Image (cartoon, rainbow, N blue to C red; front, side, top):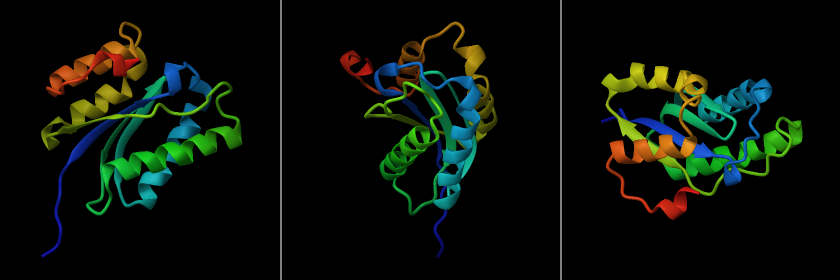
Length: 148
């Protein structure tokens, strides 16, 4: 029998210390680079977007790929790419952790739209506020000291 999975993830991670360094002009180059990482690992990237201090990814990962390893690879490779290309002056690194949430396939279209509209969404809400909402929505216990 083959392996069949349908696990839709929203992955979210921030720049180190939430520094607002991911300026709009070069985000597309970063997103294309990250898309290439997903493609090389046989993962399906539905949507990627973000604002100055964090990014969101909607994906289905290949069954042979471990989520933590994928995120580690994305962060290491994209940090190197950002620095080599000089994309975002002031960018130091990504934060140590990440958030990942699963969704039913029925939520895919709404989730993609949510991620597409990050700039409009963050005119009224900080990353911290958004993250707390997501953690509550998914019933994940957390310590607020780790949200800084």
